[in-house]
Amino acid sequence: MEANVHTRPAVKTVPDAVFGKRTGQRLNDASSIGSKVAAANQEFYRQVSSKYDQYETGMSDPVIQRILEEDLDKIGSHFVSLRRPPSCLDCGGGTGNVALKMCARGWTVTVVDVSSEMLDLLKEKARIRGYSPTLIRAPIEQFFESSPETFDFVAFSAVLHHLYSYTSVVQQAVSRVCSGGIFYSNNDPVVPKLPTLTWAFDSLDIAFGKLIYNSEDVLPGIRRRLRKLFSPRDPSVGRRVVSPGDIAEYHARTGVSDEEIIRLLQKNEFEIVERQRYTTGRTTPIRVLNKRLRLLESFKIIARRASCQNESDPGGIAKVKDSPPMTKITNILPPRVW
Image (cartoon, rainbow, N blue to C red; front, side, top):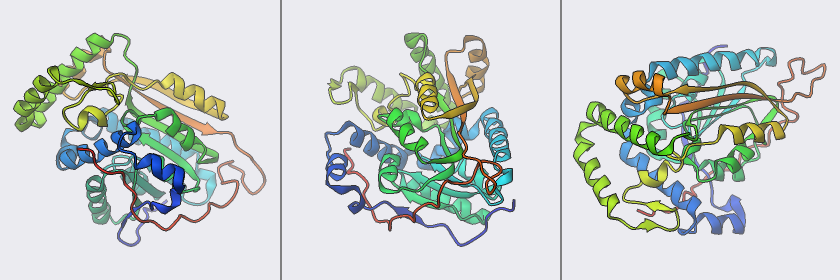
């Protein structure tokens, strides 16, 4: 398939009006944990967006880049008989680590992300390459509540640990995967078997990463950790909070249960095509050491929804029915709490 070359991508935002009274009240409630997490991610990525591509492991690690390319090739083979570009949703797509690879394959891509700064970076990358993904600025929970659209392929990459209730979001996501379509999740941390030792090893990895990639944040980072030692716990989130990152990566320390996601997918009649856990690390010394220790691990899941095959859909990939049009978009992002 040829790469999709159209008009310059525009960033849209999801409207307040489409959520209804109950949802609007919940999302605008500053005391809601979900709202705090969404607002923290907005602020966190406002602060780090300019350095994200250089510092984020998933963007810089050649192993993860190879895994993503290979996975998308495998997933693309499912769509050979579709006879049209597959419709793809990149949830929390950020600066385009997955979305740009989708676009390069000629797929029709929608990206949803809470951060306008991250989407602006993706917008420029897409413009340079001649791609035209649809870019939507909103928390992924709000997008799912605002739009009934379905997709051939729904993807998460390094996103689930940023969500307060990742299982509810996965449940929303699988309901938007077409018959015969693909659910994909990659590069989220597994639940650690040795939490204290894993925390210490991860802290060492962060320190090495800052020294190499973000040295100007070393001293501020030390000050934040000292402040955290003497700060009271925020009872609403069950932890000490001195910066947006303490909430934004909500499950970074406790991990995401791939077992729970597998059960949820199977309950929704998905076949598990591939499942894997792999070692990670921000820096080469930590990655080498971690291959032996296996303290820092991430997981990936490729799952395929059961097909409703018929003569007009020999590959079982086509949608059961045409997707409704998207709601006209305005802004509903939650208020910042920082």
